Amino acid sequence: MLGQKTEYAVLVFGYGVLNKVGGSGGMRVNMRENGSAGRAYAVRAEGLIKRYGEQRALDGFDLAVRRGTVHGLLGPNGAGKTTAVRILSTLIRLDGGRAVVAGVDVAADPRGARRHIGLAGQNAAVDEGLTGRQNLELFGRLFHLGGRRARLRAGELLERFDLAEAADKGAGGYSGGMRRRLDLAVSMILAPEVLFLDEPTTGLDPRGRGEVWDAVRDMVAGGTSVLLTTQYLDEADRLASRVTVIDRGRAIADDTPAALKDTVGGDRIEVVVTHAAELPRARDVVGRVCRGAPATDEAERRVHAPVADRVAALTEVARVLQDEGVQAEDISLRRPSLDDVFLRLTGHGAETGDRSTGRTEADAPAPAEGVTA
Image 1 (cartoon, rainbow, N blue to C red):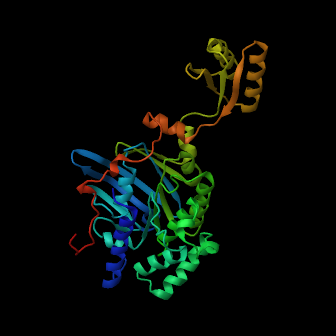
Image 2: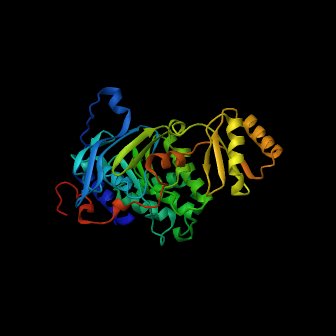
């Protein structure tokens, strides 16, 4: 698997070549769209294919990310999430289909595309032996900003990501959330139009995750478009205005989180009984009160059914269960979540990692044009 610092090096190298030859920012294209309609999307992908031997990590994958939004990309282990991100960020070549990022065709002009994108992967790319300020100035120089501009940009980003007080402390002493915020700051050195976030909060505690979420919201408010892959479905629910679910290399759903949750039904009431022998009576009570077909999970001693009037149904179920002597361990109302959507669409829950990123020769990043790898 490519190391995070290697991936940054590839992107930096692409920027450097462009700056030296005076690149114009890439060949702009519209994918079957013209005018304002074409400019509405930060990322467009149609029919992406990526093969690793006989296996297709991507098998006709489609994606459309609107400008100025967070778009979530969800999928089970091995679905192709990270492979898609690495193609869109020019780190590996596609084998079929077409991808346009910030108006630039990533296959036809990968160097041009790199001028418009940032990447923050699963592992922070910062040097823990340097201070936060030194890390940002280093990357600024690698991006050919020059010493003065690199220092100014570092100061701006330290303020923006709430790292000013720790700017001159070693990054090795930062908390997990602070390191990830510094990593996000690095990815924003050139103020990219599009930022790819691949599992940005993996391994962080709740406080660290919240800090990263706030930073992402601030970036989007500043005009950056974000493609977010995450194993935490609540993270996508909180941040993304739209979600694409990928499985076996194909997009199997694409909608707002609210619309996706509506597909699995509305609110439901759940009753967990103390003894499994009481499940039939609990099912009868829930069915009578909720007027919907209840479902039973014998292993969990659980009965649940959809409800319309949430509070009234909860109160009535609790009263009838007590009147009829059914011992309930728990009675609750539950709203559908993206976990429910994920389970319904894929047949299993979200898992950590992505088998499609297993390192093979096919994974090698595409060299900049005119340069021999």
